[in-house]
Length: 139
Image 1 (cartoon, one colour):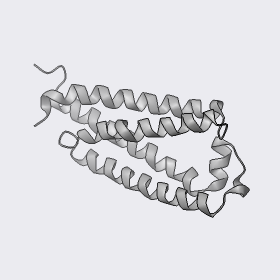
Image 2 (cartoon, helix red, strand yellow; image 1 turned 45 degrees about the vertical axis):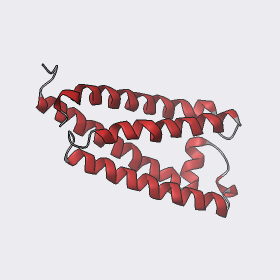
Image 3 (cartoon, one colour; image 1 turned 90 degrees about the horizontal axis):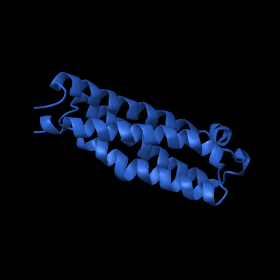
Image 4 (cartoon, one colour; image 1 turned 30 degrees about the vertical axis):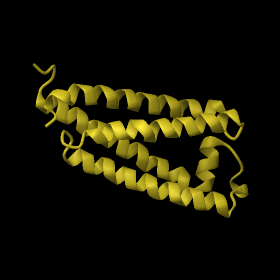
């Protein structure tokens, strides 16, 4: 017998998808604005060369696509709940790994990364818990 009702799990899944969509949507801002990116993560926004802007443009396009994918998941949360696991592995884990490597090389300050890591860790934990709770309702 399920621990939660289908209505509750549908609501929790929808919230999870929307939290992810907002997170990804907000992540576009520093990707598209060198000044905001430098203000949040450090660095010199005037030193962003064409290669940096090119990479950020590609990353922003992928981030925008994932934002839309999460909104699509919210429209039918139980049927599309597997997207949450794909968001944790490899998307969030890849972002965390990349930021850890950047911090270790001194490209970004660890202190500036801690809020991001805490947010992404909390979101990941929420996604995994909601996914596990939704297993009895999977078709």
